[in-house]
Image (cartoon, rainbow, N blue to C red):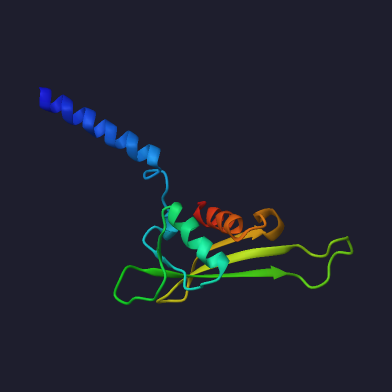
Length: 136
């Protein structure tokens, strides 16, 4: 009887600790769950994205490796239209990311955030983009 109660208390403590640490709540969306994310870039935004994606439960790699789990390569870029709608300030600038399966080339994930609303530092922009990628 004492052993069963001790196990129940221990199990409850592990579940509470895991929940508080974010282990249970930080998982990639279902469409990306089996993928490792490949981030090869060495610029400041790519470096910040590695940490931001990892904190959201993604497995991140920095180099191509054969024979492993399915991998999605991260490609990020900015986009804005030429010209504008006649208003002040010009057209909006967007920060976009695409995750492409390294075997088939199919796009398996995508995210877009407005450049101006994503913050001014690479870390803030990485958090905004990773948050958009992690949302279902």
